[in-house]
Image 1: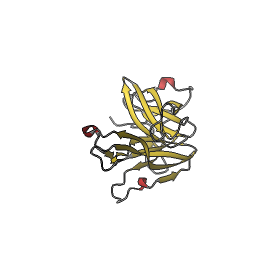
Image 2: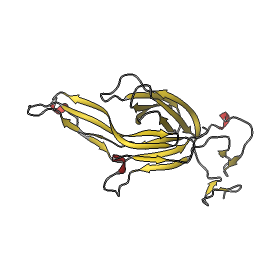
Image 3: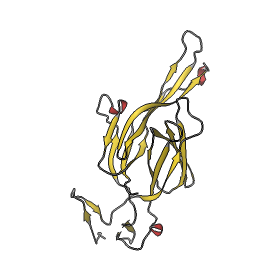
Image 4: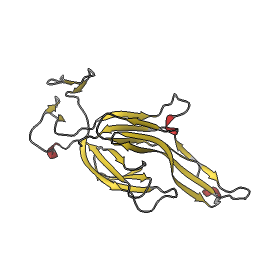
Length: 237
């Protein structure tokens, strides 16, 4: 059976809302602060655990930050951020399947599909993507190595980190000895917010580990050249 009912077009000429609409809505928001024990290079962790079903986490911070890893136990998902300094505030917005029963107010607009499912509810705060930043494979020198800065004509922005660019080189810090001490660096692409709607991406060393000439215990270098980010408009969220 074909869809029937209402369609809404945007100024770009594409259908924005109809019976096939799908998007994630704001489920939770808050802030967490970095602290605890720092890395060898002065970066501190900020950690938050949130219940979720199919989450996308957007964030912004008051100092350069990288989202490191994610762990999951059941529907509890823990996000780990590494920040340049202690006391750095990381604001987050968790987007997930909208819970229609929890939306405030009794008035608005709903769109159903032919199966009778609500696919759009105007009371929900849906995720608004305004830009993407992805690996430029065609370029000889990737611009993130020297830094990328962007500004937007919205009130406030946040980023969604989908692929973390990093490298973990291993270097000798002694010479002329049988088992020299080695140092492994973690160099990662970090995000610095330069204003409510401006940011920069660049590479920084966020951690290092010294290995005391332990031979086969010295790790091999690792790297991930690709990266991927979305920039969201979180104004009035």
